[in-house]
Image 1 (cartoon, helix red, strand yellow):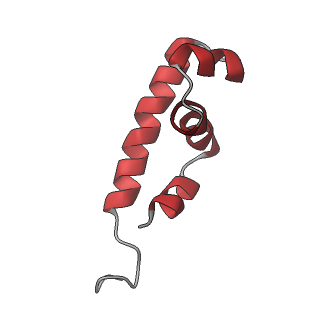
Image 2 (tube, rainbow, N blue to C red; image 1 turned 60 degrees about the horizontal axis):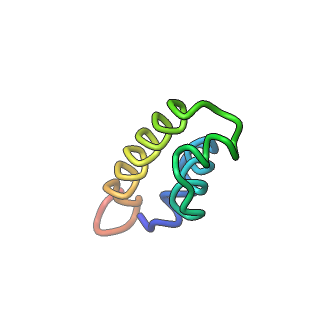
Length: 68
């Protein structure tokens, strides 16, 4: 799966947190302020978002590479 498709397949909270921390290069503290959520929530969402992104990237798309 392409990175773009994998990113788009993530839940909105995961896309939002990766947008803030990865694409906008904000620190955890800056992202927390920007999103109005606690720092611990930012850390947890980043962790789960990156795990979900890895899973999506490791999952072959149906009809590609002889699958599905």
